[in-house]
Amino acid sequence: TQTTLDLGANQIGAEGAQHIANALNNNKTLTTLDLRGNQTKDEFDEATVDY
Image 1 (tube, helix red, strand yellow):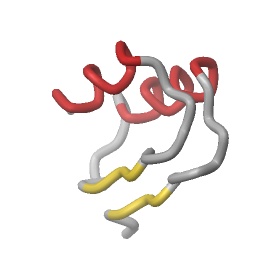
Image 2 (image 1 turned 90 degrees about the horizontal axis):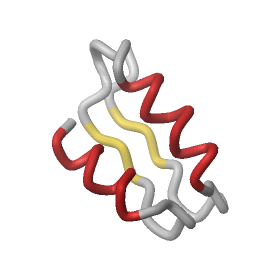
Image 3 (image 1 turned 90 degrees about the vertical axis):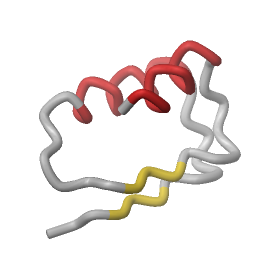
């Protein structure tokens, strides 16, 4: 079971971030997600903090 996912510095933008957020809604095992160094918008960053 994967609990950590590092997607840092992958040029993920707003559209990719939305896909990740949608996937997180169904996630039962991931406990750590690293998106540092991407081009995400503040709204996505705030949404994932609550996750």
